[in-house]
Amino acid sequence: MDNSKFVRSGKFRLGVMVDENIGERVLEGITEPFIFKDRRGEGSKKHDIPSLDNDVWRLKTISKDGVFDKALRGGRIFSVKNFLRLYYKDEQALRKILIKPKELVWTTIVKHAKKCDPGNELYSFLVKGNNAMLFFNSVYQTVGVTFSNNYTPFTDLDKPMKDVVQQWSKDA
Image (cartoon, rainbow, N blue to C red; front, side, top):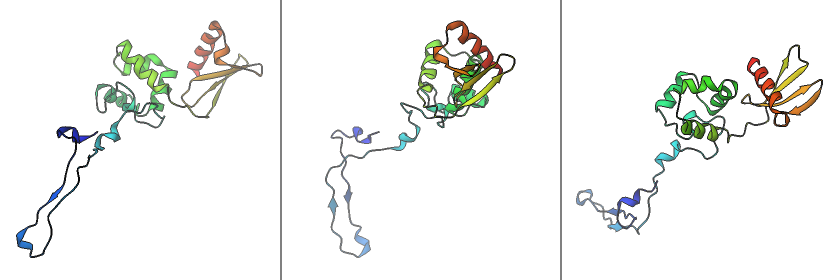
């Protein structure tokens, strides 16, 4: 943030006057004009691409110490990683914590959170009785499944199979 906008020229000058009582000989001086940049607000800026470690209020439309931030903290959601994990595990529970946000607000928050790089962590879950294993990334998003030792990326599954895998992932 640039504070110099409050001065017509946009620039400041520093001046020094001598106190007659100090007994030293000092020349008075004035600096050349300069612009002062105030960076006090940069620590609380939103990031275009959030990281998993960011506080949840770094997401778009969530104000620090605002209604959504307080509700999420009350639901033990402190970071973007916590937010995404609950989103992929139980989207409706997350919506409920946020006291049913308007659709546009919800979409904006989720879209911004999904810009995160989930990293290379993978988790697996054996689906008992179905000869299948599910694979999840660090935020518990289903990324693939093996059937009889044949791996298929989640995005390559047809709609009915995606629904089955999503149901299994709720049990993971």
